[in-house]
Length: 491
Image (cartoon, rainbow, N blue to C red; front, side):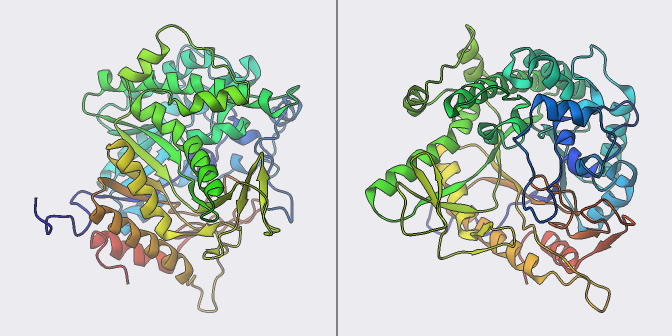
């Protein structure tokens, strides 16, 4: 190899597109046999708040949600009505030239309570129609099997992923969809941002009523995550047997972490924080629990209950590729500093990076951090990488000319794509880039519509009121040009 032999741009067949989740777009929460998921039982943020109670669920709050028919109190129940408008929405994506579109299958649309022995045919038929519509335009589906959408029936039955029983119900579901969509879906992913299970209910489906200490909660969460690891390995085995040549990925919310200063104590703390993020991909890609977690588990009195053969299963069935979301980076300090904005978590402090700007929701914008993240993951794992979420949630307003001139979104995406290209030049094997989200949807973290990400505006407000009319923004036409030139024309 010579010094001039390095990639100058994105490879042919690069998967340009966008990403969504069923509970944030579909709506139709109680028709055609569907029942509630955990996401649809979380109330939206109240007026003036910037977050909803994602991980403050209790058995009482879940039972109240199950007994409520409100989609105003629970905005993920209405989404942006993709369930009825998918032909129109996919046509917009085709006009932009999408090569891939990531959706999730709502588990509770296929097995409404989660534990049925036979699937709901109307739910299966819906995704047949969606995949067929994508293929009509040459768009490759990328499917997440579980995007914070565990059937709430399993939470109430045996406390979600805290129970090993969930593995049986999940693998019944995965086998069903693999067999049904064989020939229609090549790229799959098990759990969306699996590392966020360390914060609780939204990703584990497990309630924490009665748990008083942090260590008790961590014990439940990491045990639930172990069950997800095993389920992921079994689903990967199923996929390779049922659809030879199909690819299974894991997904990490990559929280790129810098030491707040060059003080060695800050460097060590940032390294520890980074390890806690990479633990999940160490298990799913390398197929083993890393040694550094022994100390963390010991210090927090966490004991993972494993069955004989669990570790062998993880080793034998790792994923084929590693996908990630990337929105921001963070800076970590070992102790409190003069920075009054520092947020404490144990003896770790997250501080604002003075070199970075931030979104209206306080997310720090760091395009170069994406290059750092990609190089870090490639150097560590040597499996293909796939950026499956990147975008900026912000306010959009119509101008006097009746259009949305979202140059701020173009600037954000352009800067990140430029850094992806640098990572490719560095030698990273990158499969594709999916923005979050191509069409405005209900925000996961806040359940708001006003936190907009899309290239296409949806006329719907935070109270669920509006015509649902779709309108392309300026960024729509910019991204169309980016895709058409395989990332060469970013002006």
